[in-house]
Image (cartoon, rainbow, N blue to C red):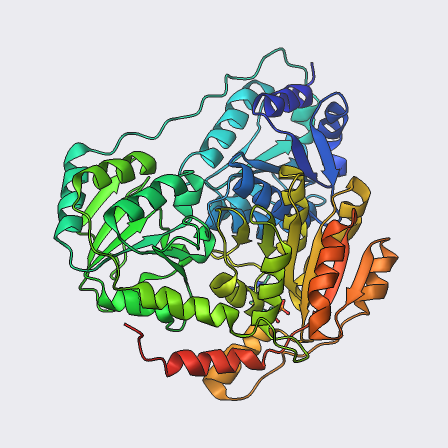
Amino acid sequence: MKAAELFVKCLENEGVEYIFGIPGEENLDIMDALLDSPIQFVITRHEQGAAFMADVYGRLTGKAGVCLSTLGPGATNLVTGVADANMDHAPLVAIAGQAGTNRLHKESHQVLDLIDIFQPITKYASQILEPEIIPEIVRKAFKLAQTEKMGACFIDFPENIAAMEIDDVPLRAQFPTMPEPPADRVEAAAQVISAARNPIILAGNGVVRAGASGELTAFAEWLNIPVANTFMAKGVIPFKHPMALGSAGLQARDYVSCGFDRADVIICVGYDLVEYHPHLWHPTRDRKIVHIDTCPAEVDACYVLEVGVVGNIKLSLTRIAAQATPHQGHLLRPLRQALSDEMRQHRADENFPLKPQKIIWDLRTALGLEDIVICDVGAHKMWMARMFRCEHPNTCIISNGFASMGIAVPGAIAARLAAPQRAVVAVTGDAGFLMNSQEIETAMRIGTPIVILVWTDNAYGLIGWKQMNNFNRVSNIRFNNPDFIKYAESFGAKGYRVQHAHELLPILHEALAANTVSIIDCPVDYGENLKLTEKLGEMICPI
Ligand SMILES: Cc1ncc(C[n+]2csc(CCOP(=O)(O)OP(=O)(O)O)c2C)c(N)n1
């Protein structure tokens, strides 16, 4: 068979269902081999869209999402989505065609050293220099992408190698199991936790990746220790649970900060430092930190450990809970109550444009608890992370490591492919929306109904918020928008414009029930941003 056919068989062997991408002149053999494969190729309209689709597919399934491009400009277009997956620890394998090995050593049409470009943004980047190594390279890329800490891998496939003949088979796909935590570390952690006066848990995205939210909830419940989650770990403990404190992650202080202030022991579970820098929640550097994760802790002056428990997170939590003494755990309840009260405060607000809190209340009301929101990056993300209640993990996907705008629309398409039974909403600012809105055509063509809820303010809202905080004036943040209804209709999609606050909920219901792509233009009142800054700045801790 051709090397390209063996390559595709190796992808099938890894359980690949979809490849997101754009064909080119240097991956003709791969594209041809895909015609005889059950793998579905999802043609996208920009390689960045393809990479974000693979990124979100990986986050939701735990299996590497796969994206493909041609060499040179196609591959550089993948970069943002690949870096996003890598920094947010989402499993992803990116594949690029490459020029033949007979012209890689010199100036040549569209040729870039892609290994050099992808190495800093992946766990592993390798070039297929002969057909014999295809099974090893593909296996290694998937194994590393899907092993903690998960991330992105890159394969560069020169066209002359792809066309060669080879007679070989894929390597068996094996999945490494996470080692058990050492007994002495479990015991040491249990002792520190038992001796604590006011322990608090900071749960991160690693809990989602480990599928350990049930164990985390049981741990918190049994030991009576309240849980703050990072933006990327929303839903690891159901918000309705009395031990849930909500999200931690604002650059400013929030109610949850009072919990960290009062804590003497902070138990970090599956927490990646990139999610929420420790200087924001541990500036005093004097608390005892218990690190429960799959990997040893990153070095940081504000993250010096009392005890590290490295291994299978589920087992670590269960075993520590069995040895530690339960606490009272009521001290931080008022923090949860204060946040809950704020969530409800503007639910019936009639003002127009709509307050962020009102938009979030209506979205939560319209969606089922298992439905999925993919959030873009901007002021809307801060509001969503803080105020959108989640009862299950992976029901509100937030990019908060690399934090790249443009993930929501392509991400929602991938979410719908990964979970066809669940409704999917892309929540996005008007700027992030237009960064990848071309993928609406993809969604219409492949038939993935999604709702795109655009928070319209004709500006780079988050940047304006920060500029006002720092300088009390804004610089170069305003722009105009197309008519979103006509824009939607030009794709054959459905467009809505919210013109009164009470219209949003019925529009959401109608859009969610429709079997198509819907775009909702929802004007937002970001005057609330500065009010929030002011309120949190003047906050007196409710405990
Ligand atoms: C690709 C990318 N470019 C720039 C930024 C910096 N940035 C973060 S938020 C933001 C503004 C987002 O505006 P919009 O999408 O309208 O959302 P809003 O803040 O108004 O809710 C910018 C420019 C980024 N995070 N990612």
